[in-house]
Image 1 (cartoon, helix red, strand yellow):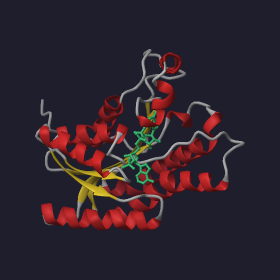
Image 2 (cartoon, helix red, strand yellow):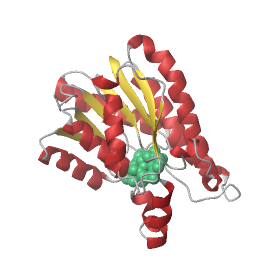
Image 3 (cartoon, rainbow, N blue to C red):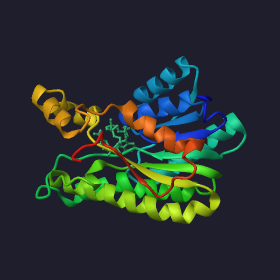
Image 4 (cartoon, rainbow, N blue to C red):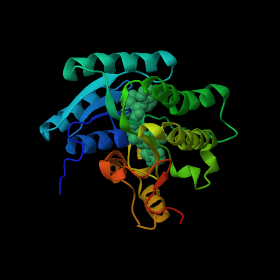
Length: 256
Ligand code: NAP
């Protein structure tokens, strides 16, 4: 079996400095892809992801841009163009993983307009315009994978505004799949449940929090970034060529 299913491919993973994005970057690089490791503010963490990929024999480079404004999307693409042309002679790439995202701890009642707008800007507006402005750069036969959330299937009203952003990402996935199908580009969303990353550390790393989270999954444990990365790798690979417009549950069977 060829384990390097992505040899010769180029992948862009947003929010790959930490957490799930880091796991995805490591996995796609292990499959042979050259990976652009995007970060927002944590250059140190992105450099560490790149080093981990290189230590494992893979290829990667870091690109930083905060995605809380349209200017950030433009800066990311400009940096990508420069880095890719320098490394490959062209600004084309094959796989875009829209993973960067922000969460909230505000309830429905507490959420103010500023927070609502921030959630939608980072989680919806940035992926929308990143895809729109990448269309001339993304090769035919490529892949777009949006990291959504299990909260689009499981009611969890405590973080309402965040949930709405992920619902929008699912809708984006469906319609984009139809739009880009003629180019052989597949578009899918991956919906993680609770994953052990920095956003959950404060409550998940307590005995009660851990027990609560483990109890949600039919498989009786908390998700790790690698659990999500493996599903993304399938969608990104040639084996995933006949699957598009799908919302792939990656919750370990939470609330079945
Ligand atoms: P995380 O550990 O907090 O990492 C978030 C990543 O996104 C970091 O690389 C961060 O970059 C980047 N990012 C955040 N805000 C940004 C901004 N304004 N501009 C640019 N980059 C920004 O999060 P995670 O848990 O891995 O989550 C990754 C994705 O999975 C998110 O879309 C999240 O909604 C989704 N998800 C997570 C879970 C979960 O339980 N963890 C469950 C379902 C869905 P810097 O650190 O460099 O700033």
